[in-house]
Length: 186
Image (tube, rainbow, N blue to C red; front, side, top):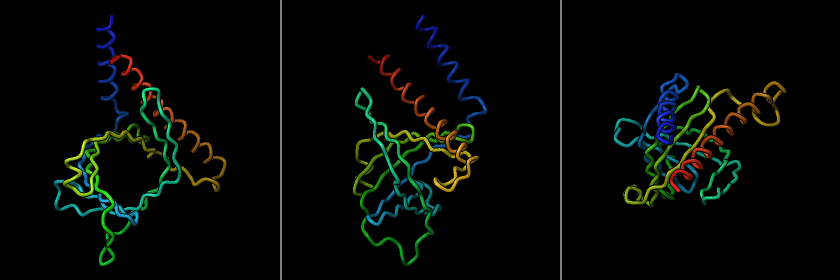
């Protein structure tokens, strides 16, 4: 009986990933250097021709929820402002930390971007490479643009609620998969 369920689950998972709902998949290894000023530069590892990108990420709010197994789920709202490449005004403050990231990204129905990332953090690129790995799962809404809070007409407010409901449903799916995996392991 268990073997039959496992085969059906595996077949269902393969079918799900083979459907057109998963519109893109990619893997990228990057090196982020975060400065005390809040500017972060990112370069693709192994692509010397690619220029680094610069951005400023601002956390608007976050909530941490701890699951019964001790794992933390963080809900965060952030904004990211892409900055022009610096010339003479490049960040002169020393790096606060460096993160080496191996990220696998999957886009579902042009709405939700799943990012599964192995992260190593240190004071330098060498220290990050030698550090132990942490693993992050990030879901990002990339579908219909959600208007800013406060100035949205009623039709857009419905869109924002639908977007939030879909994203929270995806988070619930991930938490349930973790819970089920814990049951099978225990």
